[in-house]
Image (cartoon, rainbow, N blue to C red):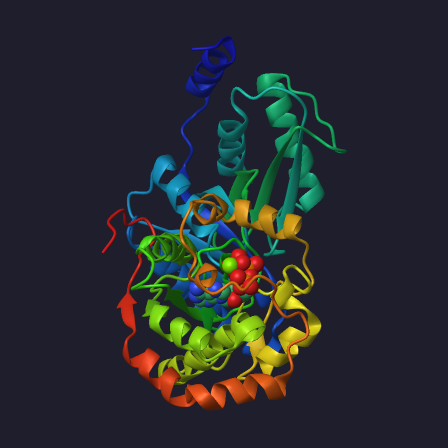
Length: 412
Ligand code: ATP
Ligand code: MG
């Protein structure tokens, strides 16, 4: 044990027990701004929080003015840590604070503040906020009072500008919350608030990030993957499965639909599509996606396209893709650089999965030179020969459904 740890333990032993309970205090983002819809937003968010932590503990989510309090029976500091950590994945949460929930008397607040600062070094500041203005001290008085107690007990210097530690005190209607630091959440809107969409999910880097960005705007998403089967191995399916399992932490209840696409690709190839084969194939993926999305009650398709990233993603080609379906195609990455997309993929922990080797179904088709200015009329000609509407229906019939669950290690 380092000297610092020993000091921390000794200091902690001298602190009188806190008269309160550990809980998680959540700060909500845009939800607060939603006026009339706020009630619905908050209810959805509270449900999503409860669902996310279900494997850890059953919790009560108490809604207060712009904050949530997450309580559980027999809460320990360790359990509250795990809850807070898990809740940072729930869309719509801006901060998760592991807090002491204490009575509305100054002594209880002091004890919690002393417990939180025991054994720390460096400068500190106390910042109080009153959501209940009837509390006998003003925020400034409370700051000074608790600051003086900490200084007296541990000799730590106060520094109001850029302190090393901040002790936050929030006076609420029935209780006071005392905490130090917190875990940043994802922000955004609660999943489910914006409807449902279907993500076209390759095993690549981009589509998982596209899915994340739409979930973060409140869309609940299903996933559709096209494998090159029977002409490729199942590796791309394993990757898609692992990616969806990771992304499931942001919404729960995710569904992955897998279509064996190899034979359809061969048909496209033998239809003489030549340089247009890649775009013709993408149009067929979108058509198939549209049929499936309608069945699932989805109202949009989502892809990982970024303008100009590869030859199939020129403006002309994206326009030719839009032409294939009636449903809107959402492309949240359209204006992003590859570097930015990779940074985000790393943060949401999908990058290392995407970088695993696989045999992407697209490589089955890749002609030597891909068309960068696909003509819609030419594509329609090819599709007429193929009877694509029928083909899309058949592909949807061949779909296999999987349910990847976050935290579940088994691959089904
Ligand atoms: P990604 O990294 O997402 O694979 P990419 O940069 O490799 O994207 P493309 O291969 O041209 O670009 O694919 C563009 C988009 O088309 C993907 O982001 C995805 O939405 C969709 N897509 C491509 N291949 C597949 C596939 N096998 N199954 C489902 N969707 C796919
Ligand atoms: Mg790809």
